[in-house]
Amino acid sequence: MDIERSAQSPVTRVLVVGSINMDLVVTTPVVPQLGQTLAGDGFATHAGGKGANQAVAAARLGAQVSLIGRVGRDAFGAQLKAGLVAEGIDTRWVLETEGVPTGIAAITVSQSDNAIIVVGGANLALTPADLDNADAAFAQADVVLVQLEVPLDTVAHAARLAGRHGKPLLLNPAPAQPLPEALLAGCALLTPNEHELAVTLDAETTEPAQDWRELMARLPGRVAMTRGADGAYHLGADGAMHHQPGFAVEPVDTTGAGDTFNGALAAFWPLGMAAAMRLACAAAALSVTRAGAQSGMPGRAQLEAFLELSLIHISEPTRRYAI
Ligand code: RIB
Image: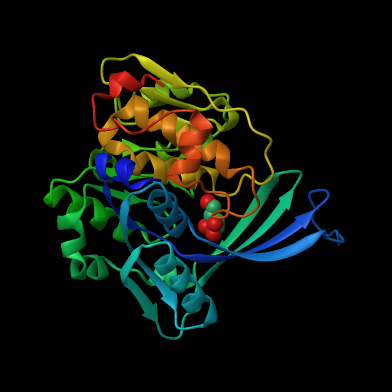
């Protein structure tokens, strides 16, 4: 991004509270069945974790990002923290936990889709007291972004602190679990996919065929639902459904697409829902064109080029960018 553009664009201060994992990625020609031994095509380690991924996505798009999280006092932890620093992320609230390993995710990528097993490790040691110790980060943020790979009482406390400081809370309910009403009430925006929407709102069935529009209507104006290649939906407080179609790309690895969407949504939050959702869908589309959760996340210049859109006047009213 050139200096003129960065000077004229707003810098959103994004605080992410969330997980930091090392992703251990195996690629296979077909999805393995239970009890089957397969010859894989390849193996790689990538920086991951929904919290770290969303922090990186927002930082690459020009946001000023702080991350609150925990890693183990081990080689993965040191490597991941160094990677976050290299992305320009403020890691002063990324703590090291003695005697607990850094979180990992065992990921199988097959035919451009994935299956993931997460071992939380140090992420599960992140406490409400850790957030109290980082109160200044809440005070400085424009927007707070959380997911569900750290303990739920810590997520609930993040919502309380965001509320206390008058900051909007974006909650990406992944991995999905039913959420208490009090936490839902504290969210400015919930960003589930279709499955997560049903689980989060504790619907009687988690079948995707259930009417997700009715579920969204339970929190009017406060749900942006992603639907893979179909894009994203937002039901306005006025009852009008806004659909942002997805962008056509050739997918290589969908790991981290949702994280890119969330990081971008936070980074572009001041632009309003329609513009932020369009930019977030475009960023997510770009992210699936490369292997690894973070490796495909675009920078702002790449996103601009993809959209053939100048963000020079991005601080002007968002309707100019009904994009
Ligand atoms: O959303 C993708 C992420 O989920 C991966 O990076 C993995 O670490 C898991 O947390």
